[in-house]
Length: 149
Image 1: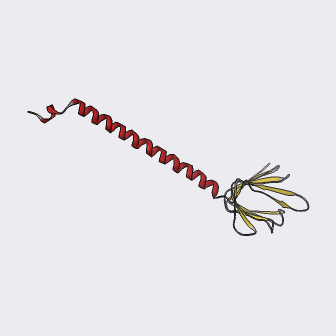
Image 2 (image 1 turned 90 degrees about the vertical axis):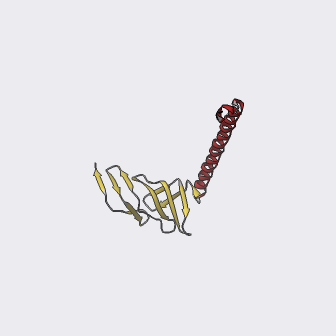
Image 3 (image 1 turned 120 degrees about the vertical axis):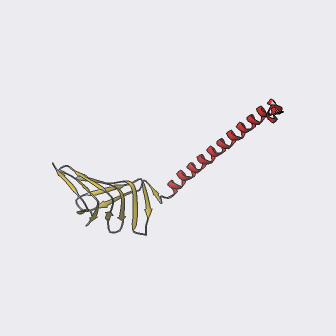
């Protein structure tokens, strides 16, 4: 007689149920592991920043430039690397960029990332900028596009 005809149907049903249950346990455990990895990545991302939402200012006799960002990391005693949504804002203009090195003592800032300068009369996009002389001088680097109003 054929061997397959002698296999008990209850045994096949039980074996199928056990296989499905083990498969579900495996899938659920992998999902929990993925969730734990995602939580660790989020926590590590937050911990990478020395300062969250840093705020600085460049002061001179005629104006004040406020500087904000989402994250900041100390490079040394004087310099801070500002990351993500960095904004320089004064009454006359605003500059937006993603990474900027700000020197607290010299009141200077430098960026090598894409930047957007907006004022009442002009819009400038560039590959970077340098602010010095307490905010009185701004030099734009790289490919720049200027729109005058």
